[in-house]
Image (tube, rainbow, N blue to C red; front, side, top):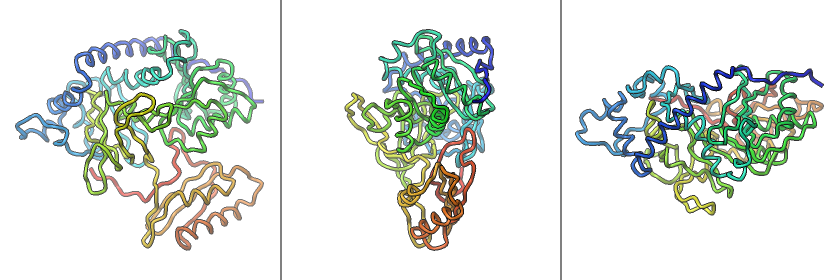
Length: 440
């Protein structure tokens, strides 16, 4: 059994108090702003605000001669924003941009710095729980002040363990703990979770799946009321593992640094209900046509953040939008399918191959994790981590290679056994198509 590790916070009480005060200020700013702006007027008010105070839009609409509608705004990409980040920062909040910010996770496009005004900072840090709490009132009402309401599990070992007071959840605590520092600390984390019995486990699907593996290895049972997931695709095999290990009550959210909580699944699993009181979504298809419904690349307009403007922003995900009346009572725009950045097909010179066909092949083998990457027009690489090391891994790799080559074309596939695929804090992916550089 690993040596004991102290899981006390590595940040001070003063830091926790300062964070709480900042959150309370943000809540007041947000509530005051929203009380003055009914949902139906928030988007138009934000567009007018951005034209007045954001350099990129000031220049773009300098000769328009009338208030622009959403249809007048150009599509922007992460590449464009990263090339001139200050152009998308409101001059009213440049002082906050220097200290209240987060950076995006790098998957394909460049990392960008996203600044927040106080209201959006509250939305990012606390609004997520406020929105989740409205769906699980039966759980939240039982959580006591200073108790462990949420345990957020991440895999960024360099970050400091800390606690945040959950303003919307009766002043309970969100504990931030990190897998991957050491075997001893991972063991103490699962023991801590078993003892504290947090109402909610929160993390990316791949991290919560890893937590289930650590718990199983040490024969530790963890029994939260529910599991809250966000940050990357939730694959069906992961859902089954998380349900079996922790809870059949799972909520999955579509979130991004640039947009905060964009959508959340309902108990009926009818897709991600878009939080239209703070964001507006559209899709753009391969012909460049923009619409409110349909399938294409998602365009995000976050009309909640007054510091950094993201209007008709290509967030990098593919999805399908539809307006629905859901059995849960929600009425409005819903993302009914969200492959995100996962390639649905690989395109070679003489054929297009659905990634589902390759996945069916990989399911036949003892594979813990895999990544299929199209590296060139005529080649694809498969990296895999085995669940068993008593096999002849060279033979297994050759078998995988032969079966995939039968689908994608002779001699196109290269298979490698690796120790790691997803880097710490990186997003878990399974299929990556041929990358084309993003133009600003």
